Length: 145
Image (cartoon, rainbow, N blue to C red):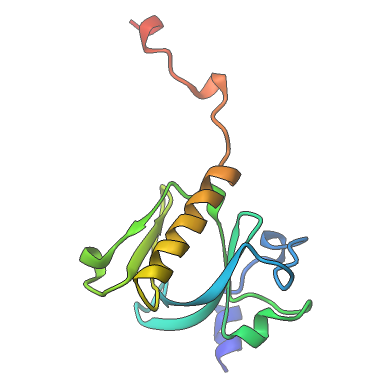
């Protein structure tokens, strides 16, 4: 029933978002996090995998371990701007947030060490996979006067 709901509401990720990423093999980081839902703001424990600039999540560890698995969600971390602690925002220990210009997602790690390791791993991935600013996108304030 849940999968029908996910398909009907368009919550399943587009295969193009994770095509070519062998998330089951040698990820940069993986483990359990609790994630706040996008529409219904409940907290659900999910298995997360960070690989090649993508943060993917699955219902459980077994679902992430095989080639034919479909993630429940995918975030391109190269589109994100910040990852930082968020205990004060969600009023929960070991919380952190991942933000882009248009959305913010909240997560809870199992302990402080795990939170810091996820923040560091995602932060490195943001830097490695972010789109570089081109010269044509930089405003030259000296010449605009």
